[in-house]
Figure 1 (cartoon, rainbow, N blue to C red):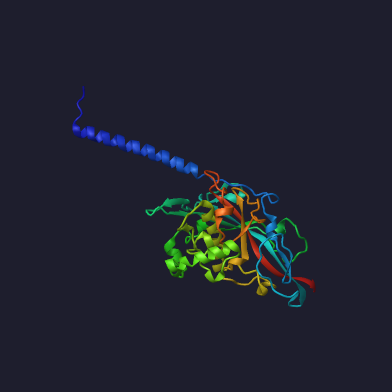
Figure 2: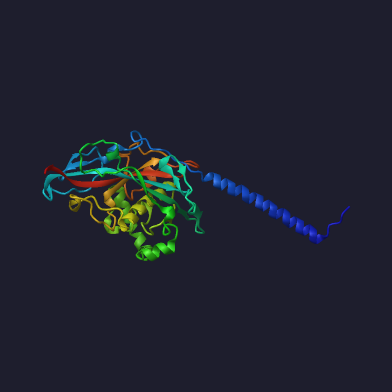
Length: 344
């Protein structure tokens, strides 16, 4: 019988343990990879979109059709002029953008869960529990141009609609600032001003305002009950739920694109003749609705979309579930005030 020295026996025991750890590690990695499969759905434009969100429709400063929906103030008076054109002041809410919030890089939730590999690596989404038992998370975001009223031809010869086709406009996977807190703060140094406890405590007031109506633009660094607009990246410092975190990133992405000059102002008297440059987002200009994993079409208090910053505790209940219900797609409605020409 072959004799095994104590040192060799110890070495064999260590090797067995290493092999076992590697096996367990490979199993956990396989489970993690499997849990991050790309999921999604093509939204049905008839049944999955809350079409009552286009209301109220106003003529001048007077609402014509409200359908029980919330609205911001409209320019007073009935007539307007844009150059030689004389028209009527129209106000409505236009569905114009679609947003994916996903854990899986290059997973297009709104395109049915299609995943591509362009060869540019990006970090996967994650949720981490901190030592103080709070959670932080990270997601990727995809921004789509989706002027659905135009390409569905719902309204013909209506010059106030945004024109264009459905298209992918922005991928955070190829944006180096989205996954780097330090780089984000260098490009947006005001982040340091709003990361302190006093500035964040002021967001409680914005939470109350946005849950009762629309948030305060004076508190532009706040996303109401959902968290902080800053930093302009995918790092959610206070992860309460999947719906809360994804809603926050929809608002944060909108604010980021306003800062970059890719989103403009479309409401108010200054925007009657066309969009205006708006580097600081007007939060009251937007409301949004979930499309995936569960289309938000069941109305709460007569409404199935909510302004930026509104608490997700009520409308977000039951809207996410394990495995296939942890990636999200949203439709963004934007307030539009327009001078609809009637006389050339």
